[in-house]
Image 1 (tube, rainbow, N blue to C red):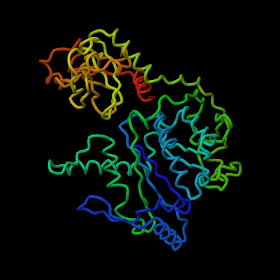
Image 2 (image 1 turned 135 degrees about the vertical axis):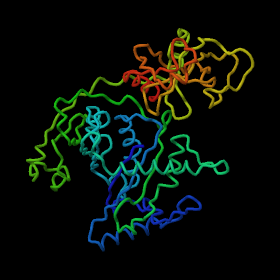
Image 3 (image 1 turned 90 degrees about the vertical axis):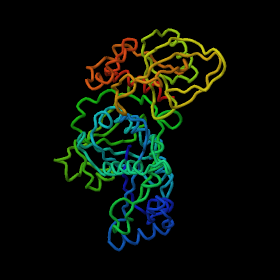
Image 4 (image 1 turned 180 degrees about the vertical axis):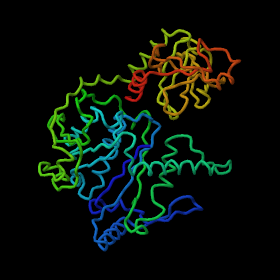
Length: 449
């Protein structure tokens, strides 16, 4: 779950954004009832802030739910470029001309926000979207903000839905898409409206689902950039709108108190210069252009050829087009062969059925599964349903032993599987670690389609 907690001047938003505000939660129906019309809700909000003598600033939560568990620049950029920025342009009262500057505050995670490819993306925002971006970084892992409680409560709402499950009234949530649907029903509005809280807190929430693969999924890899030497002390990164999107202004700390610092127009007269330091303009050096994406036909043909060369005991990655997985790993238990006999419905992994037709090219694998969601540490699965045939055109990469090293044996697993034989040299009791580089390769080749 990736959260954006956005603050707006209510006057800058269309009436439709306020549709349903002040609705009430129906405990019996487990959903929100009808609220105010958008125009009426907006009028009442403006009147409330006017009586308080304050600017009508409202907070809206945007929550993006996905089975794509990679917390990396690609996901951040996808959410902003494909979802949040288009929402801004569609819902501003003056259309695309409404918002000119996007002020961002996040933690300083070095694998997600505080790295050169992200600086390069920030530097190109005004050129690409006509909205200038100013990104401020806090401390890595400790820069807690409003998104943390909002996302945490969202997860709690999904867990609560699971507890309501019965055979007569099933509410079990098995996928990220189902979780998004639950939150759209139970979490899109707040239980205490903005009028009850006198203008404080969240106005409403918008929930979006991001597929882990296929249309609407995150494209990887993103445009690379050479490391900006000496960048770690800097906390503010400001898009300057250069024609080629490679220039950026950096500062030790952001101010956002002075009129010139807020509007990004005059930093020299900043009253906090001793604390924040001067603004410096630097040029980023993009890496070589990304290789052209392979067509699906080319990938499938390469998979067929790969499988003809595989041997028993080889580990191979398979592109997955169901559930919440992007790829799966398996050890080859039967090499290349074709399906002989009549067409049949065949269960893959005990969950999804595929139609096998006479002459289909196949290999058989026993599946490895991550020890927990998003982990790159795997275990060999037990059970007959975890050994199955896969189509050769879904194979993507052979995983070499150096990229899939055995870790120490889990003693608990060793006791439970001590009587099970090894599978082509792989133990059920062991854990196997996929290297970060190979994991990135798998995401790139599977998520870029």
